Length: 86
Image (cartoon, rainbow, N blue to C red; front, side):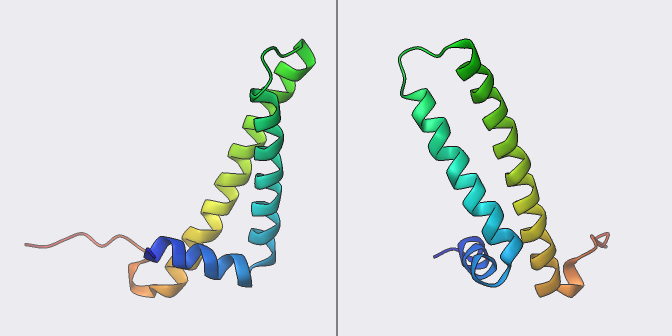
């Protein structure tokens, strides 16, 4: 299992906000699949599809921010990019 996946699993178990965001993301994804499986979308469904995609991206951004913060906490020396000297 990758280090990234290990971190996601750990955060999923230990960070309530991340867990809630992931649950919401999954629910939106399920609804989006329901819509995309339809041969035709009404105008309200088309609007819902656009809004679902936007909300999913917002949730994913928040989840990534949490992961980034946790990664920096694990690697305190790596939190700020240091210029490399040769």
